[in-house]
Length: 293
Image (cartoon, rainbow, N blue to C red):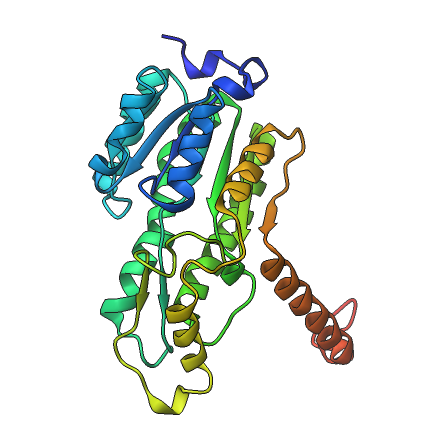
């Protein structure tokens, strides 16, 4: 078996790279695993219910492996990471895809409803990443792809707790990129808008409590949640191909925004932000001690 430290990334073709994907039973994770395998890559797919991805190893017995993985279970993460590296001798691409959304007002959602979202979207992603960093650091190569969302770029009524998890992913990933760049490891944050996955279906949660005073704000989010499943403009297949292309790139982006809604919403936020900065520039710059003091 080839030791990961002895095989520089430049000698590993894009087709034979080893991908480790969390949350591979549905959505982007499942489709990405399928497309990488079709392209000749090797995939270690994980899910809480491994029977949902068992067909991958049946169809691709030489290049696919599956593991049970709950990203909220620290001990399981460490064990699976070690086993996964041993399977093919290395991991070239880590995809932190496991996650889900919660819709509801900040006052409406209970701690029992929103804390599990943080455990999965934030702490689970951090735990999985940390488990593979020693391998990437020794290997001096690799690519970490963290699934964020346009909700990690722009806050919206009714998505406050989901926004908070994805804003956390953004900050964590930017710091990670700065730390790993000198070691040859790349990081990309993927920020999709609405895509036609099961995000508004099985993978989404609605806060049970609904407060009438928030009808004009949070209520619109609830209506969107109910009415738009299966109608989103984003093509999941195009999204996973974009992720695969990023891994092939010699100069991949730190941020990869996907979809027109995500692009337009973020551009609008930047425009408003620039306007605020200009309007309060004297206040901002006047908050420091004078030069030399």
